[in-house]
Amino acid sequence: MIQELENAGGGGTNDLEGIKLSEALLDNQDAEEKTIIVITDGAGVEETADYVRKLEARGITVIAIGIGAGTEAVTEVYSNHYQSEDFRNLPKTLLRVLTRRLLNLP
Image 1: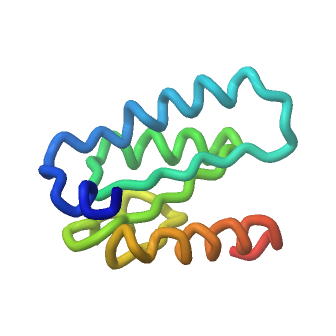
Image 2: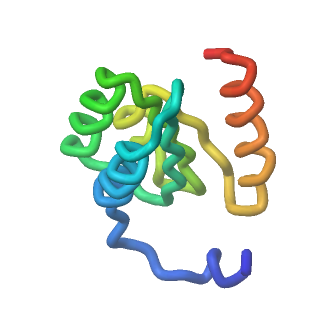
């Protein structure tokens, strides 16, 4: 599976639609804390950044993990962000994200 991901073509990343779908799923949930984790190989766009800020103002935490080269813009679009060199490091990065989230660390 990792080899397939590494060989997959680029382009067409649409973080915003994935975030909107996640928001719709969360809207029906009665939870004290709501978190969306975005895993992306894309750069993101300003429209996504605006939408993320609106969600965060509503109390929904949005965390992004940029995978691989060319995801430096993730730091500009998402205030909560992490970088992973490639898909092989994703489990470690996710563990770090979840540990920090469970311990309420910034």
